[in-house]
Image (cartoon, rainbow, N blue to C red; front, side, top):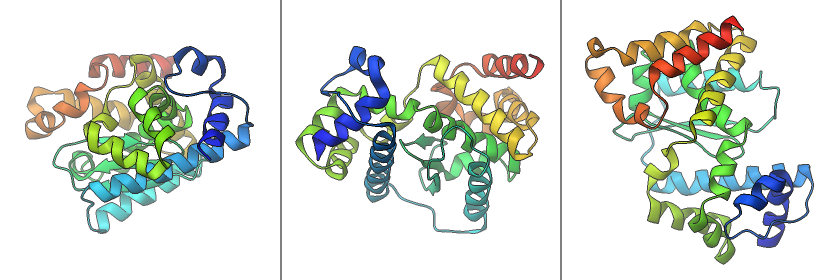
Length: 243
């Protein structure tokens, strides 16, 4: 079964994967098989993450966040992944995108949005962008330790072992600057398609970058440290809006 998984993922990644392959022996497969394998990988990783991460008990705010995520997912045109949305009880603002659809947002990050629908939408759709653009998949395919674990055991066990070794922090590790800016652009375009207020993205980023933002800005420090500077992100969004 592992070989089939590698083959299917290998089809989508093509020459890029050949250049960056770690422990993968990438050949063959179809686009449909690739998508199925990607979805399976994300589901198994999400299950392993839930086993090791405290989750917030469902409440009005978490239901609201999930509703916003599903509202956005209905407008995704690129790839119709089965997106899912969960809120973790971690103590710091963070968010994770897993291959194939699972999105996790921490409770502190949700609180930073202060209940504003389109600010929550931007935080979620940014992670959805990493999935739809397959940044999340590429990141894991290129991870030598993870690819070796996949060769040695089932996807669920490999994901659990990788999380135990690397820690949840590795899930939120930085993508390339280009990938982060692409995810921002994806997020704004998705919010626009869904009928939301695209300026909420700039407001949220700018608000949290202000020293006067107090505790909110301080809490967001680690989360934003894994992204390009806020000023650069805002400038990129404005440039895209005026193009």
